[in-house]
Image (cartoon, rainbow, N blue to C red; front, side, top):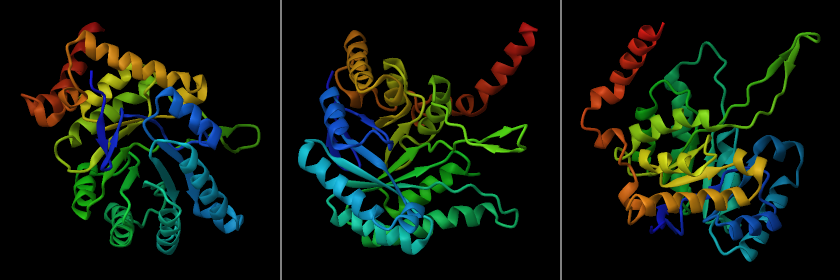
Length: 303
């Protein structure tokens, strides 16, 4: 099975890569490349860290350049800004630092009851519009699943010329400490149950936007990866699986994915991509509402 894919305008040996995470020091990047990673996505540079720790940008760029010197695969930087000026300034630093592409990691929790959905989306669109005018490297936009009309937002980003959409950002939900009566941070890795939300929206957007689609969150085994590509993914990012099992998990998923394709007579990944998407569904209404109705009826019958 030919695993080659195009993502963000880059030709990759396969769709598998680490997502933005701490797994990006130069030694780990080489281990991931040896395990089969077709690209390295660096951890996010946060504007808050830059404000609090002045040299954060310089450290990030030095790490980017060390990985670039040693790795033989594209290096995708990641940026998480808070202000329009910060997004533009640090994106230009990253571009000059030699990144092959840049992932714009939008992480905004809408808590203001006076701010409407249009304003929340407009914040993203305005920033992306400015960056597309200034940046020459490919830009991917990493979104959360909580926008009220995600296909409309995706279409607007597509018209702005973004090179890719990454679905989805994981919001880390705080727990509550009952004794102290205060929020308690909690880090919980994903599992395959989180894949379903990603599959649905990748399948809805596949064939409807020009931009590459990357799925991140919930891929822990070869069949998860098969489903991701069937939905329409050009890239498949792994984080929790690698944090739990190390770089060898990427090898297992890549080889298992290829083996599944060979066993099912699939010649190339392009043949598989999007075969289960909404655009190629014979009954779109069934895709959008039929499964919902059918599942509810089945649950009633089982009671």
